[in-house]
Length: 295
Image 1 (cartoon, helix red, strand yellow):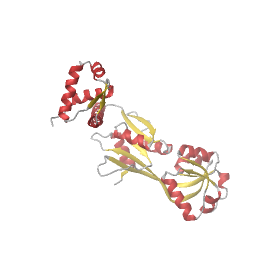
Image 2 (cartoon, rainbow, N blue to C red):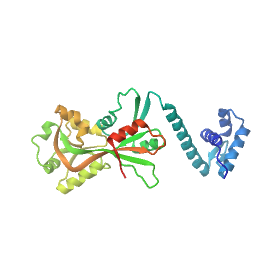
Image 3 (cartoon, rainbow, N blue to C red):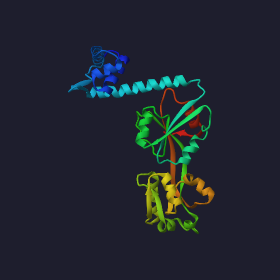
Image 4 (tube, one colour):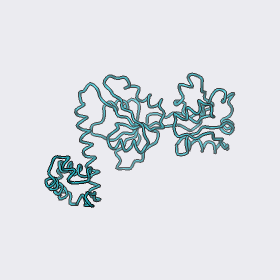
């Protein structure tokens, strides 16, 4: 197979995005015959047709879809390389962070605190679902993803997972609701509880603890967002199963108190990165200080 001409690959990407040869040619300021000839050269180099005609438009073949996925990756990487090298020596550098939407805001702030306010760093923080964040990481839109859910990896994966911290999980409530306290079994069995949803690791561990204690929890609410769980317990809807870091300010103020530590249950905070030739040096310093890579 002949070597791939990246200029031809860029033209192919434009045709795929537009859906017609004539429209892409107009956009690229080329004649349709000239653009068609360069597309044929790329197809000959790859050994497969990349489009099939349907009506007045062009539709990607299976080979075309694969080629477009690779083209997108190639040009994203090239753009990232150019931006990285352009930024070398600049006074200000961007740190692009993706964070799981349900992750503790206090933890996010704690991780980013060393760079907040630095004149040479701009923090760009976006939240989303685990799937959205992993896609963004693969597309080089994020330098790091903060999460408490370990991503799936295999032998060929380029993902690196860093363990940043593990926080204990407790029963937390208002002073009036906690009262004089009691045994862990009596608290879990008697008080209304505000729990993380069933798909979380904390909930699975809590359910196992309740089973070992032989109690059936009285569930007042199930919440998939730590910020909302915090609001529920502040409204005295029940005792919350929550890491104390999430309600650190309320506990310091005395509006919430710890009813009991839940043995063997913790929330692990992770940073996920992608192996890159030009990693962000700002991120490297944060991970060197706070994290360790997991095997």
